[in-house]
Amino acid sequence: MSIGLIALLDDVAAIAKVAAASLDDVASQAAKAGAKAAGVVIDDTAVTPGYVIGLEPKRELPIVGKIAAGSLRNKLLILLPAALVLSYFLPSAITPLLMLGGAYLCYEGVEKVFHAFMPHSAEQHETRLGTVALNAQTVEDEKVASAVKTDFILSAEIMAIALAALPAGSLWKQALVLAVVAIGITVAVYGVVALIVKADDVGVALARGSATRAGRAVGRGMVRGMPALLKILSVIGTAAMIWVGGGIILHGIESYGPPAIHHAVKVAVETVAHAFPPLAAILEWAVEAAISGVIGLMVGAAAIPAVGFVFAPAWKWLKPLLHRRQKSSAQ
Image 1 (cartoon, rainbow, N blue to C red):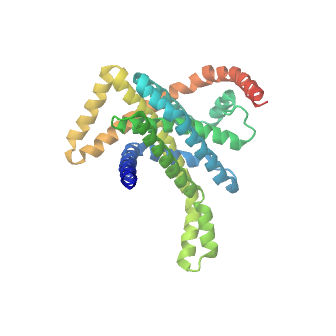
Image 2 (image 1 turned 45 degrees about the horizontal axis):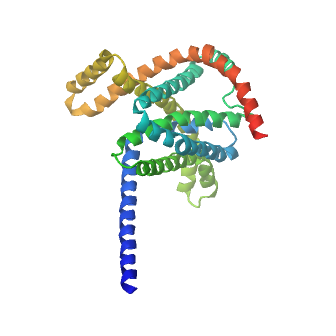
Image 3 (image 1 turned 135 degrees about the vertical axis):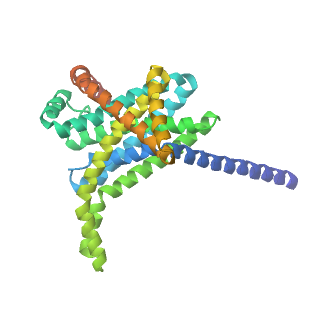
């Protein structure tokens, strides 16, 4: 009996070691996969604060929380299983779907530029579009719906990059790694966003309550600097949408588009890099980013009339049907 118990304990210890090694492997793979998606994560962090600008301070954190919850649902309940199913059964569909998402990001970014330079025309365009949410009762509902929709595209890119970075392995292990990446990135992004949007409140508290003159000066500086910082982040977020969207489309063109486009981009990147060898890596990135931005602007500009005169009328026709279905299912 004692020998059998010892053997059982040895088996349990061996299983525990394998499980610990597996968890370490999952953590390591999640860290590497998350690092690969760092560029899109930064863009996501820059984009989100723009959705809470102009709302009541007491509603800022609840709105960030709603967007974060929507982001997590996107990643865990929709994108994770979809990525695994597509990668297993239909991997060729991933790039075209990402290109559609990239086109949407270009549209969102160019629409913001359109609103900044031609506000009257932009308002007419928004009137044609109607609301994003099925039953948007408040500006807050609309902001959250729009933010979650944009986050869905960025999250899809994050999950696709993370999946591509994973080595071949069991489906369950890949699912676990992607879940760790999804949760970790969501907490990191929206934790930083929460800190950004509440930094002015921290500044007020320091300016009023700090025991030192330096602390009060820092607080006043934070309060005065936050409006400018939020505007800068809004500009960066808009540029990020256009750049990331254009980059996704450029990557898709490499796979499906005319070879001449890919060749022209490659020649441009290599020409600039060879002209300044010490800065080759930086210049390669800068040229490709600039080309991605130009493609993003072109796609976004083409998408605005398409959305306004084709997709928006179709949505207005479909929306009441969906709303009635939503009400009937709720009853």
